[in-house]
Image (tube, rainbow, N blue to C red; front, top):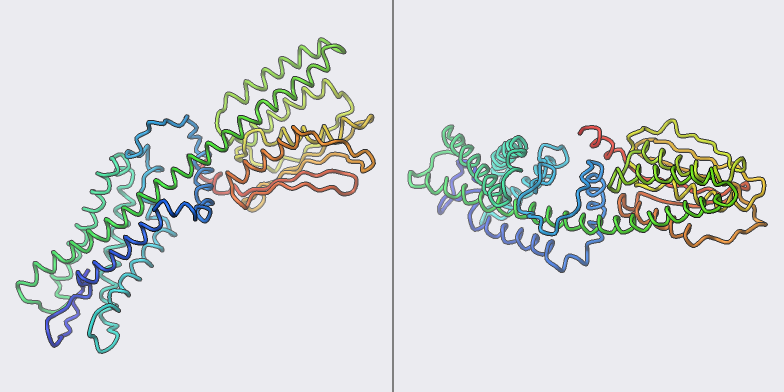
Length: 425
């Protein structure tokens, strides 16, 4: 994209953005895009996996829990949230776009051949011209994004490219009208507009292709992560059912009335858990499910089971992976309550501080007893740890600690952005 500075050169007049320079830059950009999104890039997938994790968690927070369709036509986005062009009005995206445009201008000015020295005037005028196009294009694409998202990817990309070309030609006409770059020969006007149109078409097409490939890669990563999480979810549901049935079975001989009531509670429990499909549920729903489970265990343990809740500071709509609290409570009952004749106190504390959710479940523990670890319980804890890692990445953690005669199981994960997006819907 050219800005004429009025400087006279010994031979012929040169544009700050020559077609040859832009072609070289375009070839380099296309090579980088090809290397980044070629099959070989899968070896470096671990570097980008946290991005896909966050996207999947936000996807689940929006409650888009419909089953995956193998025949899904990904060329037509389902809505603005799935559109391959990012929201360029966001501060981070806008800053990145401006910096990339300025780097392009700097490269093209430095690549100008046979200059006696660095031309700061050419850099300033070219930067002003290019940034006007970039900012106007970003504003219009952000404004029209909901409409463009309704189109197929091919037509949406063509519309975006045409919009950028139109803005480029408009800015060129304004610069030419006010004679910002000095006089040009009459036959140079057509070449000027054609040159700018070709440059904007090449660069916008490359950038849109990059956005599209990035979007497809991200959706593929989300599908793989979601399949993994659903597999983990499917494993923990039977585990939960079997342990609840074991608790009910122990009541059949001793107290048939309570056993019947426990069966009814179990049916209500599963009806509540299955009524809300998906990976993430609200804290209030997870808390209700855990309390229903404890009511079943109360029939079996009676006064031996004592509970202390400290969860008032947690927002009711905080997102949490389904069936997270119940396995932690089950672990506390197996290790802390069942082996003790007198029972004990199970403490449940949770808080939400600075965008991070903290949950702790503790139970009494005696070193002398050394109860054997339940394989099913260990699998349940490993399942929770795997789901947290898949949904929230390395920032999530599950830890176990024993001190002062108590066994502590703690987990934490960031969810501030998920809550903001869920509340905005």
